[in-house]
Image (cartoon, rainbow, N blue to C red; front, side, top):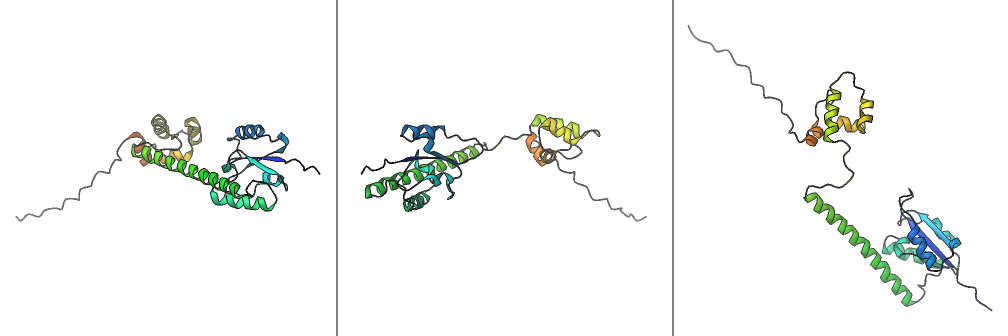
Length: 214
């Protein structure tokens, strides 16, 4: 009897489902490895999730092919558990031998080590930037020029706040965080313009009348 040829099943995954991440690199690598286009399956989900619709295509005796191990799981424990579950379903991941399990464990550990290095480098870079006065994140939408326009506009009685926000491309919360309804600067506005917060003048206690003897 002739043994049936091994069926290669290609698995691809990206973490985000908003279209910001593409599968082109993974697809090209799997096709180059000999996976048929109709045997390619994809998921748009975090690597930490256990429910993977794309994995349901595996059948007993199939060989699972993936671009990198981190496409299967995000850490070593998750990878090991996933491989154990798939092996129980009859999928062929070449971990049935001691050598196969050793290679899988080494590469899984290296993949986790690489991710941890990336996290460490990212944190170190952010700390270094903060120490030099540079903060990460999205740029502020309120600028010094917009703030001065907002001050002048809010000081006028006919100003419509909604139209002003649309013109400056800021939200009401951002506007009122920098100026009050009269156009006076609030702490965030003073900080943006580099002005120290003005202090109310100290009031002197009233003078007590002095009595003089005649």
